Length: 156
Image (cartoon, rainbow, N blue to C red; front, side, top):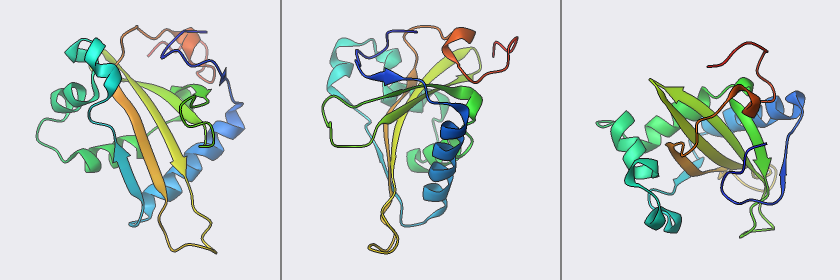
């Protein structure tokens, strides 16, 4: 298991749970009322190289596109094979866990960490939230061992 971001409470979800999570993400992204929150700049970025920040990655990969539109499209296309791990947010312990995914763009690995919070449709009209904490070039290269639900022999 890798040691990314200093999170203590990490776990690997089974494939069925990851698929259910991705289904919830798809559901939220289809709702026009869903709020996508993206941390363009984070305190941790102050000690990182510019290349490994959310803002730099978005401007490099999608220079002329609307960030929210890009995130909707890219999150919509996440696959269970891109799942890395589930982490408990130490800063906001009462919030839902975050899922970490990794995707390759050209020759670069991109680290994606998200939280999806669905409101009960009986008590609220829309208002789901997709919080994108990380969407940046990875500081460490991912290996096939980082992906618990990837088919053996598939390195990409």
